[in-house]
Image 1 (spheres, rainbow, N blue to C red):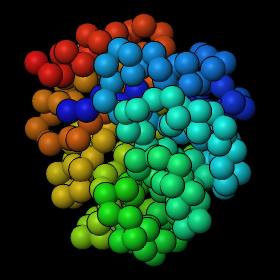
Image 2 (cartoon, one colour):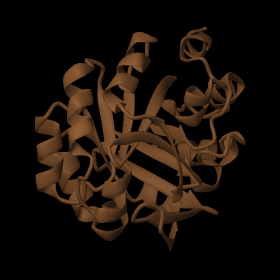
Image 3 (tube, helix red, strand yellow):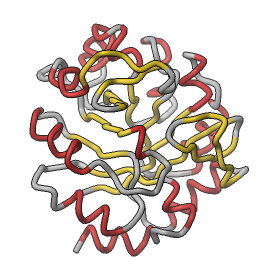
Length: 240
């Protein structure tokens, strides 16, 4: 199972939010590229990037720090936030991004997801962010009546390379992931599922690994910044 260190970008800084609320941001590093290099030096195989401002604006806002990370770090990176048209998808992939994450458009324009997944095989993931099992869009500000599992199933056989499933109520709260809901989603689809939200200890990671569903990986942010998870030790534990 892959551990994806998270770098959430707000106003050019690496931050973490509490349950997705922009006014509850804690700045952890003024230099996101330096943070990314530290994760890579500790042995991570991937980076998970989020343009928080972009998620609200509907277009890239933190492009400069993302580009700096892509130029300085040679591990693959995935990015979500503000990617809502084919031109933006093409732009990011052309700059060396390994995988784009489509969230809001997966609800509002699912045909774009299918078109992009066909045009760029293995490069398009869907981000499903849920509160109480219902999908939230536009930077988590709008909770829809769309069921998370139904949305994931709607992209079966469309070439989507991964589902990033986030339980918003767990995100940044250091209370553990929603392992049961994540495992249920992973069992419901053949698309690889990545767990996100609430991962706060190595035990959380191993519990996800051993949950009975074949998860692709897990994303962790605040726990890595706070020191609750040592990245090197976590990687060794997952390999073991």
